[in-house]
Length: 358
Image (cartoon, rainbow, N blue to C red; front, side, top):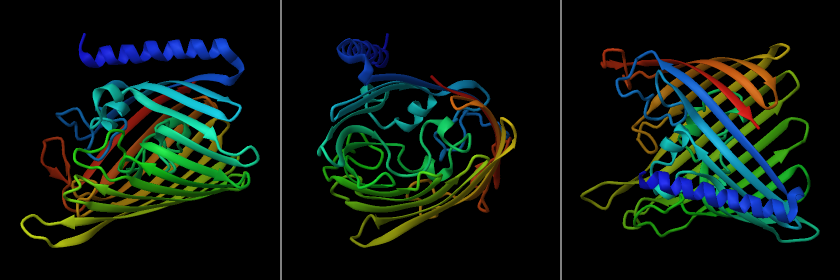
């Protein structure tokens, strides 16, 4: 048994012991849940590595049935104290947490929170948190499309630090965060500078959501000190028979050049539009168009692409869905590979998945 398996087994044992203790004390305050998403993806370029393009981190494996994400989760909420512990497995964890120590790669979420006021909805939460950036999460069943948009794949899914959140009313959320970095649990080697984030979210409770999230932090060792500034905007409208999301993200980062002290600012931009509609009863169609421009290679290897996808969902219930999606990427400078391994301007894939919450 290797060290990673031993660590995972120990975490599971501790998790089960804590659950038993909490449920014995007050079963009404503890909620247990789980999520599983099994997928099959076929990349028409038939990559020899068995992996989809390097800017994707979900549904990554080509031509094999695999687990994208499996989560066991426990939540505690009582008398101004709340906590969440989630353990995970799957290719999502394998690729998104590759930079983290082995002992942390099985943790989806581990947070504790205290209510700071008896009369106001004011909280402080700390630990490993879900990202405050973007309209997509690791849970595919909560997302409009089967696969994640390029902007989600190249911005944080998770973060570690502390967050103060305040709801002056049921519709408005205001939050400020102190973070360990850009999708980091353990800090980058040589980086001791904190990162910061903000979120302003409006939800009219009738299906319309407006959100603005930011991130400011230093990337790489302190000796380099390349600061990153990121803005995430999206608007979402959801009805009984249709829904739409429009998003735009804009980031900037200092760029230093080896051999001299000069520096520049490199930026990247992404835009995405998603629309879904009920076709008949439990059947839905969903389409997406997206544009991603990172020609200065800040968060990718220099990706500049236009993407589109078309999907069909069978929503058997709020907790179970079968999904099928065809996806296309096009880039004018041969950023992909064809079936012979030669440079190509296009990439296409078909993905299907079964998603279940329990």
